[in-house]
Length: 239
Image 1 (cartoon, rainbow, N blue to C red):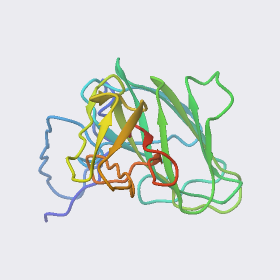
Image 2 (tube, one colour):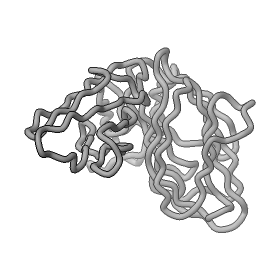
Image 3 (cartoon, rainbow, N blue to C red):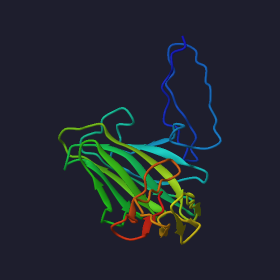
């Protein structure tokens, strides 16, 4: 009748490529969709276990994927959840995590650790309603641990995990404008590297401001570079 049949999670991160479904009361047509790269936008995701620890080594070539709690993308998480995933990136890569957390404040949430399960001090602990998450790690292995008590539940976590190559050099382009010149101490930089800018004023001009934006048009925080501070400034190469 053309009605979709639910299938089990596609374990793109595993050698087990078995996908299961329950046969309905009619014949079915199975249509696979193949892609050249794995992305969150293309539907790649991992659901955290209710109370187990899963160790996942990310295959080379993966760009990004989503992580949800044990309730999945559209469901609420369970009471008493205590599941973890240990993620290991391919050689030369590490992680950038963005998204939202919606949990019972102070009782349910997700902790982020660098390294494996023996590192007991979390770098971040996100708990509360509709919290924005932005966490970058230079470590190749991170651990995500979701926890909840026996009280009320919420929609949980909706995270995007991106693989980042910290060794890649990214270009720094200085716009050519009238009234003065700006020079950078380097022509390119890696993620997280500090970049220094120096301003040479023209005749009878003042520096009003220095704007730095990333390739997506997002503002980058600049320290200094105003008429009342100095004619030098720094910023950190964004993710």
